[in-house]
Image (cartoon, rainbow, N blue to C red):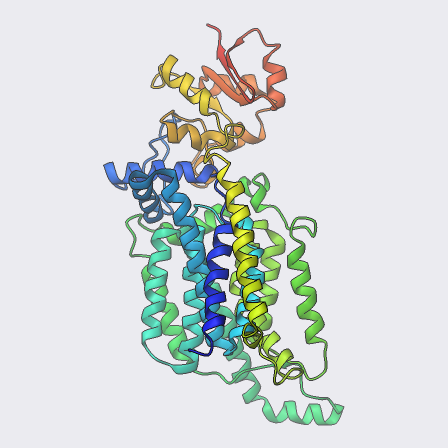
Length: 498
């Protein structure tokens, strides 16, 4: 430990500085509704009802109630600054967990550090005050526990999986079913192993007759398969241990059935232009695997292949690829490096004083300038969220008796300010999958430009709040039934004439 002091010092400084660099001070819409929902839970509990939209009769599933309460308390005690610091703290925990679990898997401090720092830099777009930041950490701990359970067979790892699953079911139940996906590569690998053993003689004869070499895919010996299945059964139990009934079992399926997937940016497919690092990582991995004497474990093939496929399907899934494929990528790099640079260790590089000092200064200076730049920003971007408009509404209108049509992107801020909304970024709430016969998302996001007058009449809209860049503004400015009563640089509020 003493001889590796410089390495661990660089590790701590790197991760803390990287966490600060990745965290954006400016909040996005989900954070605003998280605070408000958390406040409502503390005051009235989880009643499965919607309290913030003026659309009557809606029910709400509270998919991340525990995280909502957590953020609300931080906001109550420390304001927006507390939330900002909490994101830095959780990001640092995520990076530390990535490093220590990866190092436990491959037993290579320097290589684990290098891979985690590289992958960490690619996560910038996903570091924000949302429940996903907690689920990332818990997913990684579950994956590590599965690895250790199969290696050592100790029951305590089943308990760890159970506890992490319980937290996910209550902090972010929308992704809770993904835990079962983490088990699949191991169970399929075991199935292939048992099948291979049963057909061993026939396979050997076939390979001999065809003069075939051993496969580049390594099928590991099945170990502790029964305990792996038991752990998965315990995960099922955690789905029932939530105050929001059976939501962990139903939310994910319902959310994948609605029209929101086609209209929300983070659900759209990944392109090389938007996420070049994904294609770079895959290209490097493929290049390494094409080298002689290289093999890939079947489970790693499933992890890298499956997670990269999910990342290509949806932008938001890249984060899962970067975090959960870290063990598989590390194993491949470890094998590649160990066969070519047998005596080289990355951590030894930090023993050189010039490199040690350079790394410390590099991270300190970089984080200082980035954090300094972030400090110039406001927590709430008034170009994206109607700060002054909200104040005008609260001071001049009877918010309890008006019906404001608002755009999807800033509905959560209206919620935060206590203004009843037409729609907000809890997109699924406004679809038929979660509220039968509810077509608010389709009407307010998809069809609004085709027949705004019919939609406004359908819901009894009295006021319209939109961005000045919205093409609906040019139409309403020519409609004698609507008059502007508030206009600023970014937003306009229209009132329907009586």
